[in-house]
Amino acid sequence: MRSTKWVLTALLASGLTGVTVFAQSIPAVPAAPQARFVVVLDAAHGGDETGGRMNNGGLEKTFNLAMSVRLRSLLAARGIQVVTTRESDMTVEPNTRAGIANHAQAEACLSLHASESGSGIHLFASSLAPAQPVRFPAWKTAQAAWVTRSLALAGALNSVLQHSGMSVTLGRTTLPVIDSMACPAVAIEIAPELDKDKKVTAGLDDPNYQARVAVALAAALVEWRTEAHQP
Amino acid sequence: MIPRYQKYLFAVLLLASVAMGVVLWQLRERAHQRLIAGQDSAPTKAPEVAPAEQATLVVANDSDGSLLIQTHSLPLPADPGARARAVLGKLLDLYAAPDATHSVPGGGSSVTQVFLMPAPEIGTSTSAASKPRSAESRVSVSVSSRSSANSSGSPAENAQEGSPQLAVVNLTGSFAASHPSGIEAELLTVLSICATLHANLPRITQVRFLVDGQPRATLAGHGDLTRTYLAADAVPAEGLHP
Image (tube, rainbow over all chains, first blue to last red; front, side, top):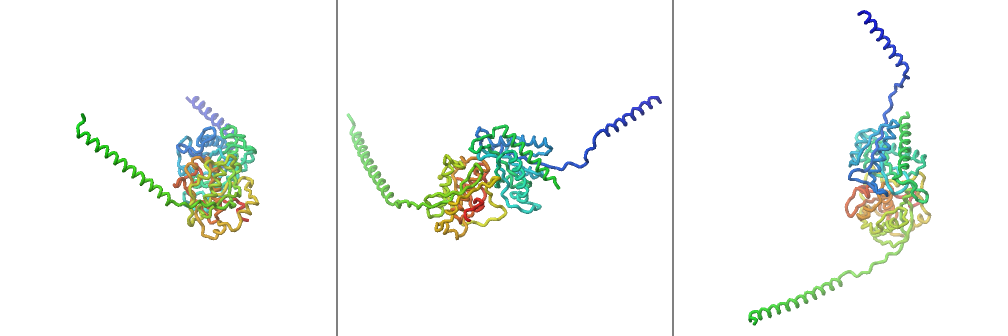
């Protein structure tokens, strides 16, 4: 009986020693928590609202959703939390989209569109005049307090996209979804890539082109996160 | 043997038929006379041929998302509403041409009417949509366009001193239905219409849109048609006047 106690004690002691040695072999993890960074991806249109029609017969709503899914994967792989306004072909009202973005308290909100008109990437910020933040902003002009940040986000996207060799057009417009968002928000319209003779070098149905755009946007958002976390 | 009463009946019916034929002939003659009289009372004033003038058109360019100022010589009526419709008709004719820089089917007939009315005061919380601009400045203004835009003596110039006006542009449903879908494409169309109106009729400071006489949410899924556009904000950065 006494010998059994001694054996159990010896086993317990050796086990604790092993755990201690294993714990010491793990490198120390920084204690500082990772700052929160959320990106909202809004695949425009959906359901009954088909958007434009592509040259290959496809619909804009389908392209937007595919681009949203692709970009979400890239951002998740880079450690960025992503909130999407739709994950399937469903009708989502503009106010609902803006509500999702506003609840997410995102650092960047991107509304994804596509068009066969024009060339390259079209970036649009809200045309609302900048305004001071207020405690209870009006729904349809909530973006006014964020316009300056939205323009900065558009600038960051423009910089990376141009660095990736894409032609970019900047503009400001009125979109109900963007105007109701309380976050840095930019509408991104992807158009075919044209050369100087206005011949299509990369169409919207080109998977390589879609991948290039998505990678560039992901890189721009990583850069935006770095800027946002700078003191 | 035909009975006598049938002979009388046949005679009566024959007489009635002849009488009805005569009455119908007279009615036809009366209707013809009324028609001729109506034609005589119709206005016979010959349509006036307006003198050709230089009109300033702000033309969209899809390739770089810019608005370019061009001048065209076209007959411009003195009436401001008709004048506005004429310049917009020319602008949309350019867009419907095969080699258009901003291709939109429909042509000049896509503008049904342009109504002009005193402009209401609007808040300044929302500015008009700014024109798209490329990373490099691509908006160009030709020297000739500047000189023509400032030609003195035109009705538009003379009316500049008046009160600001709101233009309500009524587009056809077929134009909206056939318009290319896209934020930039629709914005360029709207802004070029606003800027062209302001360039030729400087009193027009605000523009609203109807489609087939009814308010419509968007032009082709993106361009907001529910709001009032400030015409001056749509003019290219270099402006129409030095």
